[in-house]
Length: 356
Image 1: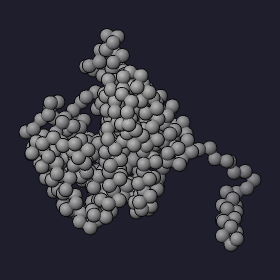
Image 2: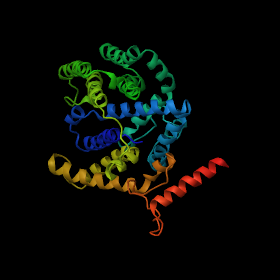
Image 3: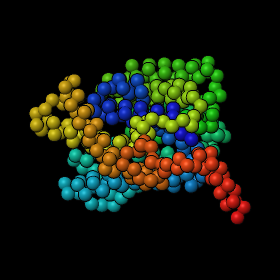
Image 4: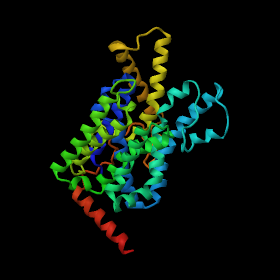
């Protein structure tokens, strides 16, 4: 049974990421901290997968995650090798990104969004251990990433990007665990509002007093980002409605079924469109520049979805479809046979099968 509300959050987060990268509007990171929302949703789904499948959940998540990256690598890696990328064993990170895959020149910018898959991979690998610990000591475990990020920030000591991101987004992933286990739903409205308000106030205070090079862009203020995002996730997941079995709309289905394809391909498209625009003297800033670039980016990302989006269906053991969301054609029931009779015949056939 699909949870339409979670599907809606994922779809909004996907659209927000594309618009932010195309426009650079810092306010979008505050209004909707998309990356933390995506990690929280993934944490909730990962907890559900572990409950269903145990450690096999890791293999299933990786199987859904990696094929789309491999398709991108089939295009990007040969292109970078032909333009100067050194051939060594680190190229294997394009198959299993435990570290940032190597890139050069144009690839360093166009493929920069692959950090999300790197972090996602680590969270998936750690979840079979983290989930039992979280269920045994939820508050203590939840405090770990925020305390670690505070220490990293206040100490000012450079750390490995993976360690920094584990601290930055680990709280959101654990809040996803809490959502799956019903912990957020069991909080009283007063407690939820008080916790979210305190986190938001602390995050806003840090953001205002420690702006980054782009002002109040949360991507430049990790501690403020984590606190503000925690408040946001608490509200949107703590107030989540109960899942329903109603069929979501086609656009919602499309965005969820192709979220990974959209995420992986939108940055290369944005970089290519912007470079071509600058090379031909077209405006790339202001309302005119943003308007035409966003229109072209949406069209080209849609083309990428049509060309390679079906890989997500194959990875998820779904029948590959060019455009997900279209209702499948069903064989018509003969007018001469009432539907109730067909249903009764199906029940009898199932009963006969069970007896044999």
